Image (cartoon, rainbow, N blue to C red; front, side):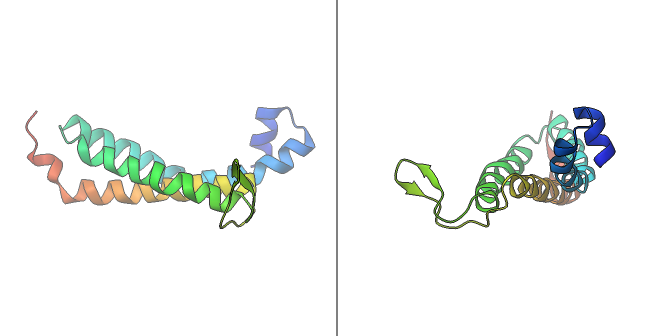
Length: 125
């Protein structure tokens, strides 16, 4: 991971030190993310567009965004005006990347389950 980050960002030591752990978390779930894209595309191509939409909606908006906030921010961090963060782990950017990686895995698993159920085969195109 350090070599890949350095290659993309000019081998600056501070950038490599910051980016390498983020890239490791993301790489751990890229296979699941690719699987989600392929299986959702197959279902959509077969005419089943609603289930892939719900999988994406749940994994991206209902899980990823709140999880990224919780993992990245500290308790009490200001959000908007007087509203503060009620819960938070405080991992910063690493927390956001963990949320991205985790929800990519969830999206892949949900897509695999939906594909294996085979309802997409019943659609008329």
